[in-house]
Length: 449
Ligand SMILES: [Zn+2]
Ligand SMILES: [Zn+2]
Image 1 (cartoon, rainbow, N blue to C red):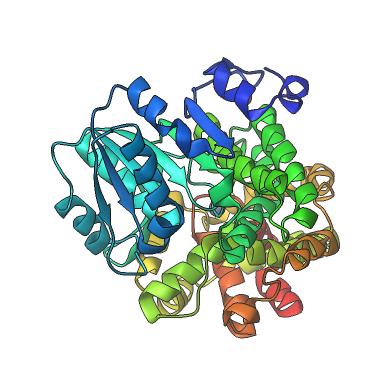
Image 2: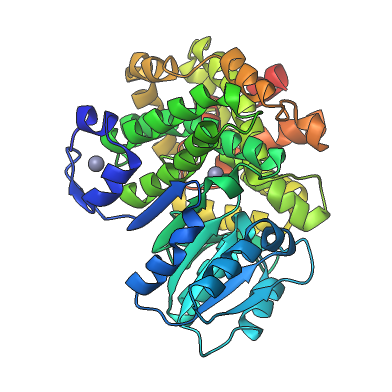
């Protein structure tokens, strides 16, 4: 597989392909074997159940998603004479924590042999854990194209009050019934677009990390995401009218983004600095009840906050002495204290990450700095591939998505501090690390936020 070939490949073709050899040198593993995104897709559930050899599905759903889709799923199974049991969470919101996972497990019927999740983000994450725990096959009936977790085999969870990514179980089939997806709350459709425009940043940061750190990079996977992203952006004008083709583009984009991480074996194709804004807001919400919103809404905002950062980077003239002095005088103890104060308990993992990684090591920094200076033109070429702030702003505005963090209750000061702390979320080279390496992180924060 090469970049030209992937450009014209439909999602169906890609699924049918299974695992494939790639010009990056890797054999990418097969993804979810069945993806059905069409009107009336849930009518295919009986055939899917037969094909996977299950006798009695266990359906997991939330109150609202049961109304939106669960009832229809049950009707289809009743009509086909398939025996099943179900658990509809009697409370809302359902959150991805121990209590809700425990609740699903304690209502589980051990005579069942298949898990069907009916919902989107949290229901999907919890159902994947139930499937992993019981060892049964998992089918998801998506109710909104709001996040890219449908094709992933991990669950984004709050454990011990911390946001973590837990290994769970990938879906054997993704059923995206357009009659249901088109009825999803508009806020969830906006979230899907937000989680998709995020890929503008993540793909460019993946390329920069490849260039500077020598991180694995696959141009084919990157192109796969680019093509899906373009389709979503092109579809947005028709999204407000809930046009089926437009909603399909978003759902396919969400599935492809999930697949891209599966192919690459890392989250780079789908998440970069824009996602770290979102992660920090989630952690602050857990620790301090601070303002937060849907993952995709936050990632869309994170994208709009990240693009001006790259515009700022374009104008930088590098001062090597200044950068070396900045790093020499960096006060790690004070920094860690500020992380704890701002992020809460989640800061522990960020601080532990640095102990393992040693990104603040003076010698390592000096080497990186030389490399940055040497490769500056190449870095700029990658940065110039990003769309303008206005393009993405117009896309988000067109569908009525939040475009300013204050719309979801975040203050200017919170956003500014979040920006500086994004560099510590993961062991990943992103814009804020580049700015720190250049001794310009605080200057950039003052200027931009
Ligand atoms: Zn590849
Ligand atoms: Zn995401």
